[in-house]
Image 1 (tube, rainbow, N blue to C red):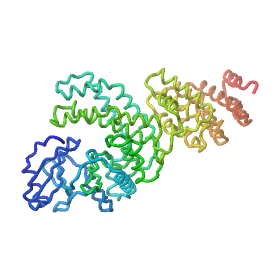
Image 2: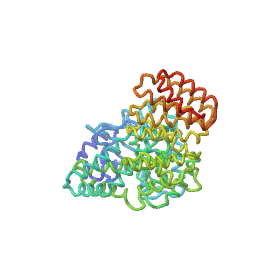
Image 3: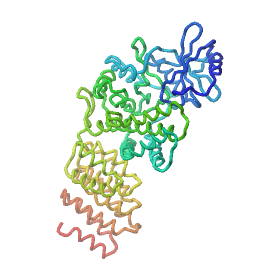
Image 4: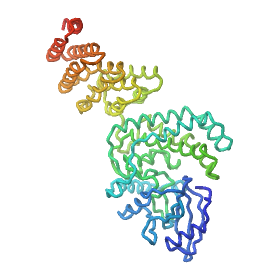
Length: 531
Protein backbone atom coordinates (compact mmCIF):
# COMPACT_ATOMS: atom_id res chain seq x y z
CA UNK A 1 0.00 0.00 0.00
CA UNK A 2 1.41 3.35 -1.06
CA UNK A 3 -1.11 5.60 0.71
CA UNK A 4 -1.35 5.71 4.48
CA UNK A 5 -4.58 4.04 5.66
CA UNK A 6 -7.27 5.93 7.53
CA UNK A 7 -6.40 4.36 10.88
CA UNK A 8 -5.20 6.37 13.87
CA UNK A 9 -1.57 5.71 14.75
CA UNK A 10 -2.54 6.02 18.40
CA UNK A 11 -4.75 2.94 18.02
CA UNK A 12 -1.88 0.97 16.43
CA UNK A 13 0.47 2.06 19.23
CA UNK A 14 -2.08 1.04 21.86
CA UNK A 15 -2.48 -2.38 20.29
CA UNK A 16 1.30 -2.88 20.14
CA UNK A 17 1.60 -1.95 23.79
CA UNK A 18 -1.23 -4.19 24.94
CA UNK A 19 -0.52 -7.24 22.78
CA UNK A 20 3.27 -7.15 22.47
CA UNK A 21 4.38 -5.09 25.42
CA UNK A 22 5.95 -2.49 23.12
CA UNK A 23 5.62 0.85 24.88
CA UNK A 24 6.49 4.35 23.62
CA UNK A 25 6.49 3.28 20.00
CA UNK A 26 7.45 5.70 17.24
CA UNK A 27 5.69 4.64 14.01
CA UNK A 28 6.85 5.39 10.48
CA UNK A 29 4.56 4.45 7.59
CA UNK A 30 6.42 2.65 4.77
CA UNK A 31 4.84 3.25 1.33
CA UNK A 32 5.82 -0.13 -0.14
CA UNK A 33 4.11 -3.23 -1.49
CA UNK A 34 1.56 -4.03 -4.18
CA UNK A 35 -1.24 -5.19 -1.88
CA UNK A 36 -3.83 -2.42 -1.32
CA UNK A 37 -5.12 -4.40 1.66
CA UNK A 38 -1.85 -4.29 3.60
CA UNK A 39 -0.12 -1.32 5.25
CA UNK A 40 3.35 -1.61 6.80
CA UNK A 41 5.18 0.45 9.40
CA UNK A 42 8.54 0.59 11.08
CA UNK A 43 8.11 0.69 14.85
CA UNK A 44 10.96 2.06 17.00
CA UNK A 45 10.95 1.78 20.75
CA UNK A 46 12.88 3.78 23.33
CA UNK A 47 15.89 1.47 23.52
CA UNK A 48 16.46 1.83 19.74
CA UNK A 49 15.13 -1.58 18.71
CA UNK A 50 13.00 -1.67 15.56
CA UNK A 51 10.14 -3.92 14.44
CA UNK A 52 8.36 -4.47 11.13
CA UNK A 53 4.62 -4.02 11.65
CA UNK A 54 2.18 -5.38 9.11
CA UNK A 55 -1.42 -4.19 9.26
CA UNK A 56 -3.89 -6.36 7.38
CA UNK A 57 -7.02 -4.39 6.57
CA UNK A 58 -9.80 -6.88 7.19
CA UNK A 59 -9.33 -10.63 7.46
CA UNK A 60 -6.18 -12.71 7.76
CA UNK A 61 -5.43 -16.22 6.58
CA UNK A 62 -3.99 -17.91 9.69
CA UNK A 63 -1.69 -19.92 7.42
CA UNK A 64 0.15 -16.73 6.43
CA UNK A 65 1.63 -16.63 9.95
CA UNK A 66 1.49 -20.30 10.94
CA UNK A 67 3.59 -21.45 7.98
CA UNK A 68 6.56 -19.08 8.32
CA UNK A 69 6.58 -19.90 12.03
CA UNK A 70 6.67 -23.64 11.30
CA UNK A 71 9.28 -23.31 8.52
CA UNK A 72 11.53 -21.21 10.73
CA UNK A 73 11.24 -23.88 13.43
CA UNK A 74 12.34 -26.46 10.83
CA UNK A 75 15.62 -24.61 10.47
CA UNK A 76 14.98 -22.84 7.17
CA UNK A 77 16.97 -19.73 7.96
CA UNK A 78 15.66 -17.67 5.02
CA UNK A 79 12.25 -17.42 6.72
CA UNK A 80 11.47 -14.55 9.11
CA UNK A 81 8.88 -15.76 11.61
CA UNK A 82 6.33 -13.38 13.15
CA UNK A 83 6.81 -12.56 16.80
CA UNK A 84 4.39 -13.96 19.37
CA UNK A 85 2.12 -11.74 21.40
CA UNK A 86 2.26 -11.85 25.18
CA UNK A 87 -0.64 -14.33 24.98
CA UNK A 88 1.30 -16.58 22.60
CA UNK A 89 -0.65 -15.67 19.45
CA UNK A 90 1.04 -14.74 16.17
CA UNK A 91 -1.12 -11.65 15.53
CA UNK A 92 -3.19 -9.13 17.43
CA UNK A 93 -6.68 -7.80 16.79
CA UNK A 94 -7.19 -4.12 15.98
CA UNK A 95 -10.89 -3.69 15.44
CA UNK A 96 -11.70 -5.36 12.14
CA UNK A 97 -8.00 -5.49 11.25
CA UNK A 98 -5.06 -7.72 12.15
CA UNK A 99 -1.62 -6.66 13.36
CA UNK A 100 1.46 -8.85 12.80
CA UNK A 101 4.91 -7.94 14.11
CA UNK A 102 8.28 -9.18 12.80
CA UNK A 103 11.90 -8.41 13.65
CA UNK A 104 13.03 -5.47 11.51
CA UNK A 105 15.79 -6.50 9.07
CA UNK A 106 17.59 -3.61 7.42
CA UNK A 107 17.85 -4.14 3.69
CA UNK A 108 16.13 -3.88 0.32
CA UNK A 109 14.00 -6.05 -1.92
CA UNK A 110 15.44 -7.87 -4.94
CA UNK A 111 14.02 -5.32 -7.37
CA UNK A 112 16.08 -2.59 -5.74
CA UNK A 113 19.08 -4.82 -5.07
CA UNK A 114 19.30 -7.53 -7.77
CA UNK A 115 20.44 -10.95 -6.62
CA UNK A 116 24.09 -11.89 -6.95
CA UNK A 117 25.08 -15.28 -8.37
CA UNK A 118 25.46 -16.66 -4.86
CA UNK A 119 22.08 -15.30 -3.78
CA UNK A 120 20.35 -16.86 -6.79
CA UNK A 121 21.84 -20.23 -5.84
CA UNK A 122 20.85 -19.73 -2.19
CA UNK A 123 17.33 -18.80 -3.32
CA UNK A 124 16.99 -22.04 -5.29
CA UNK A 125 18.30 -24.11 -2.38
CA UNK A 126 15.87 -22.47 0.05
CA UNK A 127 12.88 -23.11 -2.24
CA UNK A 128 13.93 -26.77 -2.59
CA UNK A 129 13.96 -27.12 1.22
CA UNK A 130 10.52 -25.54 1.44
CA UNK A 131 9.16 -27.91 -1.22
CA UNK A 132 10.63 -30.90 0.63
CA UNK A 133 9.00 -30.07 3.96
CA UNK A 134 6.58 -32.66 5.35
CA UNK A 135 3.67 -30.65 6.70
CA UNK A 136 1.82 -31.77 9.82
CA UNK A 137 -1.85 -32.53 9.24
CA UNK A 138 -2.95 -29.48 11.29
CA UNK A 139 -1.35 -27.24 8.65
CA UNK A 140 -1.89 -29.29 5.50
CA UNK A 141 -5.66 -29.57 5.95
CA UNK A 142 -6.02 -25.79 6.20
CA UNK A 143 -4.01 -24.92 3.09
CA UNK A 144 -5.53 -23.92 -0.22
CA UNK A 145 -5.02 -26.60 -2.90
CA UNK A 146 -4.35 -25.79 -6.57
CA UNK A 147 -7.50 -26.54 -8.60
CA UNK A 148 -6.65 -24.57 -11.76
CA UNK A 149 -9.58 -22.36 -10.85
CA UNK A 150 -10.98 -20.19 -13.67
CA UNK A 151 -12.00 -17.25 -11.46
CA UNK A 152 -9.21 -14.90 -12.58
CA UNK A 153 -9.82 -15.70 -16.23
CA UNK A 154 -13.52 -15.03 -15.76
CA UNK A 155 -12.81 -11.70 -14.08
CA UNK A 156 -10.52 -10.61 -16.91
CA UNK A 157 -13.24 -11.43 -19.45
CA UNK A 158 -15.69 -9.44 -17.35
CA UNK A 159 -13.39 -6.41 -17.21
CA UNK A 160 -12.78 -6.61 -20.96
CA UNK A 161 -16.52 -6.31 -21.45
CA UNK A 162 -16.76 -3.44 -18.97
CA UNK A 163 -13.91 -1.58 -20.65
CA UNK A 164 -15.84 -1.58 -23.91
CA UNK A 165 -19.32 -0.81 -22.60
CA UNK A 166 -18.86 1.47 -19.58
CA UNK A 167 -17.66 5.06 -19.38
CA UNK A 168 -15.00 5.93 -16.80
CA UNK A 169 -14.28 9.51 -15.78
CA UNK A 170 -11.48 9.00 -13.24
CA UNK A 171 -8.17 9.39 -15.18
CA UNK A 172 -6.54 6.10 -14.12
CA UNK A 173 -9.73 4.16 -14.76
CA UNK A 174 -10.10 5.81 -18.17
CA UNK A 175 -6.51 4.89 -19.07
CA UNK A 176 -7.02 1.34 -17.81
CA UNK A 177 -10.15 0.88 -19.94
CA UNK A 178 -8.36 2.26 -22.99
CA UNK A 179 -5.45 -0.14 -22.45
CA UNK A 180 -7.76 -3.13 -22.01
CA UNK A 181 -9.59 -2.27 -25.21
CA UNK A 182 -6.39 -1.70 -27.19
CA UNK A 183 -4.89 -4.99 -25.93
CA UNK A 184 -8.12 -6.98 -26.14
CA UNK A 185 -6.86 -9.54 -28.69
CA UNK A 186 -3.62 -10.17 -26.79
CA UNK A 187 -5.51 -10.52 -23.49
CA UNK A 188 -8.08 -12.94 -24.91
CA UNK A 189 -5.25 -15.01 -26.39
CA UNK A 190 -3.55 -15.03 -23.00
CA UNK A 191 -6.73 -16.15 -21.26
CA UNK A 192 -7.34 -18.88 -23.85
CA UNK A 193 -3.80 -20.23 -23.51
CA UNK A 194 -4.16 -20.36 -19.73
CA UNK A 195 -7.54 -22.07 -20.09
CA UNK A 196 -6.22 -24.72 -22.48
CA UNK A 197 -3.32 -25.52 -20.17
CA UNK A 198 -5.60 -25.55 -17.12
CA UNK A 199 -7.80 -28.22 -18.72
CA UNK A 200 -4.73 -30.24 -19.62
CA UNK A 201 -3.24 -30.05 -16.13
CA UNK A 202 -6.51 -30.73 -14.31
CA UNK A 203 -6.55 -34.16 -15.95
CA UNK A 204 -3.11 -35.01 -14.57
CA UNK A 205 -2.03 -35.97 -11.09
CA UNK A 206 0.99 -33.74 -10.58
CA UNK A 207 2.30 -34.16 -7.03
CA UNK A 208 1.64 -31.10 -4.84
CA UNK A 209 4.23 -29.49 -2.58
CA UNK A 210 4.08 -26.55 -0.22
CA UNK A 211 4.47 -23.45 -2.39
CA UNK A 212 4.98 -19.86 -1.35
CA UNK A 213 2.88 -18.87 -4.35
CA UNK A 214 4.24 -15.35 -4.88
CA UNK A 215 8.02 -15.57 -5.26
CA UNK A 216 8.71 -12.39 -7.24
CA UNK A 217 11.60 -10.05 -6.46
CA UNK A 218 9.47 -7.89 -4.18
CA UNK A 219 9.07 -10.80 -1.76
CA UNK A 220 12.79 -11.46 -1.48
CA UNK A 221 14.44 -9.22 1.11
CA UNK A 222 18.21 -8.81 0.96
CA UNK A 223 19.64 -7.88 4.35
CA UNK A 224 22.42 -5.34 4.81
CA UNK A 225 24.72 -8.32 5.41
CA UNK A 226 23.71 -9.91 2.10
CA UNK A 227 21.53 -12.58 3.69
CA UNK A 228 18.46 -13.55 1.68
CA UNK A 229 15.00 -13.72 3.25
CA UNK A 230 11.74 -15.02 1.74
CA UNK A 231 8.89 -12.84 3.01
CA UNK A 232 5.14 -12.25 2.59
CA UNK A 233 3.44 -15.62 3.04
CA UNK A 234 -0.03 -14.29 2.20
CA UNK A 235 -0.70 -16.79 -0.62
CA UNK A 236 0.65 -20.23 0.44
CA UNK A 237 -0.79 -23.17 -1.46
CA UNK A 238 -0.34 -26.89 -2.05
CA UNK A 239 0.45 -27.00 -5.76
CA UNK A 240 2.79 -28.55 -8.32
CA UNK A 241 6.33 -27.32 -7.73
CA UNK A 242 6.17 -25.33 -10.99
CA UNK A 243 3.90 -22.86 -9.18
CA UNK A 244 7.06 -21.51 -7.50
CA UNK A 245 9.61 -22.49 -10.15
CA UNK A 246 7.99 -20.29 -12.78
CA UNK A 247 9.33 -17.08 -11.21
CA UNK A 248 12.99 -17.71 -12.07
CA UNK A 249 13.31 -16.90 -15.77
CA UNK A 250 9.75 -15.57 -15.95
CA UNK A 251 10.44 -11.83 -15.98
CA UNK A 252 9.55 -11.40 -12.30
CA UNK A 253 12.99 -10.12 -11.27
CA UNK A 254 13.46 -7.09 -13.50
CA UNK A 255 15.91 -7.13 -16.38
CA UNK A 256 19.25 -7.42 -14.57
CA UNK A 257 19.80 -10.89 -16.09
CA UNK A 258 18.60 -12.90 -19.07
CA UNK A 259 15.82 -15.39 -18.21
CA UNK A 260 18.06 -18.34 -19.07
CA UNK A 261 20.72 -17.10 -16.66
CA UNK A 262 18.19 -16.75 -13.85
CA UNK A 263 17.01 -20.32 -14.45
CA UNK A 264 20.52 -21.74 -14.54
CA UNK A 265 21.60 -20.09 -11.29
CA UNK A 266 18.33 -20.87 -9.47
CA UNK A 267 18.48 -24.55 -10.42
CA UNK A 268 22.12 -24.78 -9.44
CA UNK A 269 20.73 -24.41 -5.92
CA UNK A 270 17.38 -26.14 -6.38
CA UNK A 271 18.90 -29.24 -7.96
CA UNK A 272 18.08 -31.53 -10.87
CA UNK A 273 14.40 -32.29 -11.27
CA UNK A 274 12.08 -33.05 -14.18
CA UNK A 275 10.06 -29.98 -15.07
CA UNK A 276 6.54 -30.18 -16.45
CA UNK A 277 6.59 -27.57 -19.21
CA UNK A 278 2.82 -27.33 -19.40
CA UNK A 279 2.63 -26.52 -15.69
CA UNK A 280 5.47 -24.00 -15.94
CA UNK A 281 3.78 -22.26 -18.89
CA UNK A 282 0.36 -22.36 -17.25
CA UNK A 283 1.51 -20.70 -14.03
CA UNK A 284 3.30 -17.96 -15.98
CA UNK A 285 0.24 -17.22 -18.11
CA UNK A 286 -2.14 -17.49 -15.17
CA UNK A 287 -0.03 -15.15 -13.03
CA UNK A 288 -0.33 -12.46 -15.71
CA UNK A 289 -4.08 -13.08 -15.93
CA UNK A 290 -4.35 -12.69 -12.15
CA UNK A 291 -2.32 -9.49 -12.15
CA UNK A 292 -4.53 -7.98 -14.84
CA UNK A 293 -7.66 -8.95 -12.90
CA UNK A 294 -6.34 -7.52 -9.62
CA UNK A 295 -5.29 -4.21 -11.15
CA UNK A 296 -8.63 -3.89 -12.95
CA UNK A 297 -10.46 -4.62 -9.69
CA UNK A 298 -8.72 -1.62 -8.17
CA UNK A 299 -8.83 0.71 -11.18
CA UNK A 300 -12.22 -0.11 -12.70
CA UNK A 301 -14.01 -1.50 -9.67
CA UNK A 302 -13.98 1.75 -7.70
CA UNK A 303 -12.40 5.20 -7.47
CA UNK A 304 -10.66 4.30 -4.20
CA UNK A 305 -6.94 3.70 -3.77
CA UNK A 306 -5.41 7.16 -3.82
CA UNK A 307 -1.69 6.97 -4.59
CA UNK A 308 -2.00 3.24 -5.29
CA UNK A 309 -4.02 3.91 -8.45
CA UNK A 310 -1.26 5.39 -10.65
CA UNK A 311 1.09 2.63 -9.48
CA UNK A 312 -1.53 -0.02 -10.28
CA UNK A 313 -1.87 1.43 -13.79
CA UNK A 314 1.91 1.33 -14.28
CA UNK A 315 2.00 -2.31 -13.14
CA UNK A 316 -0.84 -3.17 -15.52
CA UNK A 317 0.93 -1.50 -18.45
CA UNK A 318 4.23 -3.23 -17.62
CA UNK A 319 2.76 -6.63 -18.50
CA UNK A 320 2.69 -5.60 -22.16
CA UNK A 321 6.07 -3.85 -22.30
CA UNK A 322 8.74 -5.12 -24.73
CA UNK A 323 10.74 -7.80 -22.95
CA UNK A 324 8.10 -7.95 -20.21
CA UNK A 325 6.44 -10.92 -18.55
CA UNK A 326 3.92 -11.54 -21.34
CA UNK A 327 6.55 -11.55 -24.06
CA UNK A 328 8.78 -13.85 -22.01
CA UNK A 329 5.91 -16.26 -21.25
CA UNK A 330 4.99 -16.48 -24.93
CA UNK A 331 8.61 -16.95 -25.98
CA UNK A 332 9.19 -19.75 -23.49
CA UNK A 333 5.90 -21.44 -24.37
CA UNK A 334 6.44 -21.32 -28.12
CA UNK A 335 10.11 -22.28 -28.19
CA UNK A 336 10.02 -25.12 -25.68
CA UNK A 337 13.71 -24.48 -25.04
CA UNK A 338 15.59 -23.82 -21.84
CA UNK A 339 19.18 -23.04 -21.01
CA UNK A 340 21.31 -26.05 -22.06
CA UNK A 341 22.76 -26.40 -18.56
CA UNK A 342 19.30 -26.89 -17.09
CA UNK A 343 17.73 -30.28 -16.32
CA UNK A 344 14.54 -29.60 -18.27
CA UNK A 345 12.90 -32.33 -20.30
CA UNK A 346 12.70 -30.88 -23.79
CA UNK A 347 9.56 -30.92 -25.85
CA UNK A 348 9.87 -33.16 -28.90
CA UNK A 349 7.02 -31.35 -30.62
CA UNK A 350 7.91 -28.59 -33.05
CA UNK A 351 6.30 -25.16 -32.87
CA UNK A 352 4.08 -25.66 -35.91
CA UNK A 353 2.67 -28.94 -34.57
CA UNK A 354 1.97 -27.41 -31.16
CA UNK A 355 0.22 -24.45 -32.76
CA UNK A 356 -1.92 -26.78 -34.88
CA UNK A 357 -2.86 -28.87 -31.84
CA UNK A 358 -3.85 -25.80 -29.84
CA UNK A 359 -6.07 -24.73 -32.75
CA UNK A 360 -8.16 -27.88 -32.14
CA UNK A 361 -9.85 -25.99 -29.32
CA UNK A 362 -10.43 -22.77 -31.25
CA UNK A 363 -13.81 -21.01 -31.08
CA UNK A 364 -13.57 -20.56 -34.85
CA UNK A 365 -15.31 -23.57 -36.43
CA UNK A 366 -13.36 -23.35 -39.69
CA UNK A 367 -9.97 -23.02 -37.98
CA UNK A 368 -10.82 -25.90 -35.66
CA UNK A 369 -11.85 -28.20 -38.53
CA UNK A 370 -8.73 -27.40 -40.55
CA UNK A 371 -6.58 -28.12 -37.50
CA UNK A 372 -8.42 -31.42 -36.98
CA UNK A 373 -7.71 -32.59 -40.53
CA UNK A 374 -4.06 -31.61 -40.15
CA UNK A 375 -3.67 -33.47 -36.85
CA UNK A 376 -5.34 -36.61 -38.20
CA UNK A 377 -2.89 -36.53 -41.11
CA UNK A 378 0.04 -36.02 -38.72
CA UNK A 379 -0.98 -38.94 -36.50
CA UNK A 380 -1.67 -41.44 -39.28
CA UNK A 381 1.92 -42.52 -38.63
CA UNK A 382 3.41 -42.96 -35.12
CA UNK A 383 4.59 -39.74 -33.43
CA UNK A 384 6.90 -39.27 -30.45
CA UNK A 385 4.92 -36.51 -28.74
CA UNK A 386 1.68 -38.34 -27.96
CA UNK A 387 2.05 -38.06 -24.20
CA UNK A 388 2.51 -34.30 -24.38
CA UNK A 389 -1.13 -34.02 -25.47
CA UNK A 390 -2.66 -37.23 -24.12
CA UNK A 391 -4.08 -35.86 -20.86
CA UNK A 392 -5.27 -32.72 -22.62
CA UNK A 393 -7.24 -34.81 -25.10
CA UNK A 394 -8.75 -36.90 -22.31
CA UNK A 395 -9.89 -33.72 -20.55
CA UNK A 396 -11.55 -32.46 -23.73
CA UNK A 397 -13.68 -35.61 -23.95
CA UNK A 398 -15.84 -33.79 -21.37
CA UNK A 399 -15.81 -30.37 -23.07
CA UNK A 400 -19.12 -28.50 -23.29
CA UNK A 401 -18.74 -28.21 -27.09
CA UNK A 402 -19.76 -31.52 -28.71
CA UNK A 403 -17.54 -30.89 -31.76
CA UNK A 404 -14.52 -30.65 -29.47
CA UNK A 405 -15.54 -33.87 -27.72
CA UNK A 406 -15.63 -35.60 -31.09
CA UNK A 407 -12.26 -34.20 -32.10
CA UNK A 408 -10.64 -35.33 -28.85
CA UNK A 409 -11.96 -38.88 -29.15
CA UNK A 410 -10.90 -39.28 -32.80
CA UNK A 411 -7.39 -37.92 -32.24
CA UNK A 412 -6.91 -40.22 -29.23
CA UNK A 413 -7.91 -43.20 -31.38
CA UNK A 414 -5.38 -42.14 -33.99
CA UNK A 415 -2.69 -41.88 -31.30
CA UNK A 416 -3.18 -45.48 -30.14
CA UNK A 417 -0.31 -46.51 -32.43
CA UNK A 418 1.93 -43.94 -30.66
CA UNK A 419 1.32 -45.35 -27.15
CA UNK A 420 4.32 -47.47 -26.08
CA UNK A 421 3.17 -47.35 -22.44
CA UNK A 422 -0.24 -48.78 -23.41
CA UNK A 423 -2.12 -46.02 -21.65
CA UNK A 424 -5.03 -46.77 -23.97
CA UNK A 425 -5.83 -49.92 -22.00
CA UNK A 426 -6.71 -47.72 -19.03
CA UNK A 427 -8.25 -44.82 -20.94
CA UNK A 428 -10.23 -46.59 -23.64
CA UNK A 429 -13.47 -46.66 -21.65
CA UNK A 430 -13.36 -42.85 -21.40
CA UNK A 431 -13.40 -42.75 -25.21
CA UNK A 432 -16.03 -45.47 -25.35
CA UNK A 433 -18.28 -43.35 -23.14
CA UNK A 434 -18.46 -40.74 -25.90
CA UNK A 435 -20.20 -43.31 -28.15
CA UNK A 436 -23.18 -42.70 -25.88
CA UNK A 437 -22.95 -38.90 -26.22
CA UNK A 438 -26.23 -36.97 -26.13
CA UNK A 439 -25.29 -35.52 -29.53
CA UNK A 440 -25.54 -38.51 -31.85
CA UNK A 441 -23.23 -37.02 -34.47
CA UNK A 442 -20.49 -36.86 -31.82
CA UNK A 443 -21.22 -40.41 -30.69
CA UNK A 444 -21.10 -41.67 -34.26
CA UNK A 445 -17.81 -39.97 -35.17
CA UNK A 446 -16.25 -41.53 -32.09
CA UNK A 447 -17.65 -44.99 -32.81
CA UNK A 448 -16.38 -44.90 -36.38
CA UNK A 449 -12.80 -44.27 -35.15
CA UNK A 450 -12.57 -47.06 -32.57
CA UNK A 451 -11.13 -49.66 -34.96
CA UNK A 452 -7.87 -47.69 -35.06
CA UNK A 453 -7.27 -48.57 -31.40
CA UNK A 454 -7.47 -52.27 -32.25
CA UNK A 455 -4.61 -51.93 -34.72
CA UNK A 456 -2.19 -50.91 -31.95
CA UNK A 457 -1.69 -54.38 -30.45
CA UNK A 458 -3.29 -57.65 -29.32
CA UNK A 459 -4.45 -56.33 -25.93
CA UNK A 460 -5.94 -53.23 -27.50
CA UNK A 461 -7.65 -55.35 -30.14
CA UNK A 462 -9.18 -57.64 -27.52
CA UNK A 463 -10.49 -54.59 -25.67
CA UNK A 464 -12.03 -53.07 -28.81
CA UNK A 465 -13.66 -56.36 -29.80
CA UNK A 466 -15.16 -56.80 -26.34
CA UNK A 467 -16.59 -53.26 -26.14
CA UNK A 468 -17.95 -53.26 -29.70
CA UNK A 469 -19.66 -56.62 -29.16
CA UNK A 470 -21.23 -55.35 -25.95
CA UNK A 471 -22.47 -52.14 -27.60
CA UNK A 472 -23.93 -54.10 -30.54
CA UNK A 473 -26.08 -56.02 -28.03
CA UNK A 474 -26.79 -53.19 -25.57
CA UNK A 475 -27.95 -50.63 -28.13
CA UNK A 476 -31.09 -52.63 -28.92
CA UNK A 477 -33.38 -50.00 -27.36
CA UNK A 478 -31.54 -46.99 -28.79
CA UNK A 479 -33.54 -44.95 -31.31
CA UNK A 480 -30.55 -45.04 -33.68
CA UNK A 481 -29.93 -48.76 -33.14
CA UNK A 482 -29.59 -49.63 -36.82
CA UNK A 483 -27.02 -46.92 -37.51
CA UNK A 484 -25.01 -47.89 -34.43
CA UNK A 485 -24.95 -51.54 -35.46
CA UNK A 486 -23.97 -50.65 -39.01
CA UNK A 487 -21.07 -48.52 -37.75
CA UNK A 488 -19.91 -51.36 -35.50
CA UNK A 489 -19.94 -53.80 -38.41
CA UNK A 490 -17.96 -51.32 -40.53
CA UNK A 491 -15.52 -50.79 -37.63
CA UNK A 492 -14.90 -54.52 -37.46
CA UNK A 493 -14.39 -54.79 -41.22
CA UNK A 494 -11.83 -51.96 -41.19
CA UNK A 495 -10.04 -53.60 -38.28
CA UNK A 496 -10.01 -56.93 -40.09
CA UNK A 497 -8.64 -55.37 -43.27
CA UNK A 498 -5.83 -53.77 -41.25
CA UNK A 499 -4.72 -56.80 -39.20
CA UNK A 500 -6.20 -59.87 -41.00
CA UNK A 501 -7.11 -61.47 -37.69
CA UNK A 502 -9.71 -64.21 -38.35
CA UNK A 503 -11.18 -63.73 -34.87
CA UNK A 504 -12.37 -60.27 -35.90
CA UNK A 505 -14.32 -61.73 -38.82
CA UNK A 506 -15.79 -64.49 -36.67
CA UNK A 507 -17.07 -61.99 -34.09
CA UNK A 508 -18.51 -59.72 -36.77
CA UNK A 509 -20.41 -62.49 -38.53
CA UNK A 510 -21.70 -63.84 -35.22
CA UNK A 511 -23.06 -60.40 -34.28
CA UNK A 512 -24.71 -59.96 -37.68
CA UNK A 513 -26.46 -63.29 -37.23
CA UNK A 514 -28.19 -61.97 -34.09
CA UNK A 515 -29.93 -59.15 -36.00
CA UNK A 516 -33.64 -60.09 -36.10
CA UNK A 517 -34.58 -57.77 -38.96
CA UNK A 518 -33.78 -59.57 -42.23
CA UNK A 519 -33.42 -56.31 -44.17
CA UNK A 520 -30.74 -54.96 -41.82
CA UNK A 521 -29.06 -58.33 -41.47
CA UNK A 522 -28.53 -58.32 -45.25
CA UNK A 523 -27.26 -54.73 -45.10
CA UNK A 524 -24.72 -55.59 -42.40
CA UNK A 525 -23.64 -58.75 -44.17
CA UNK A 526 -23.00 -56.73 -47.33
CA UNK A 527 -20.14 -54.97 -45.55
CA UNK A 528 -18.34 -58.32 -45.36
CA UNK A 529 -18.65 -59.40 -48.95
CA UNK A 530 -15.32 -60.42 -50.47
CA UNK A 531 -13.71 -60.56 -47.02
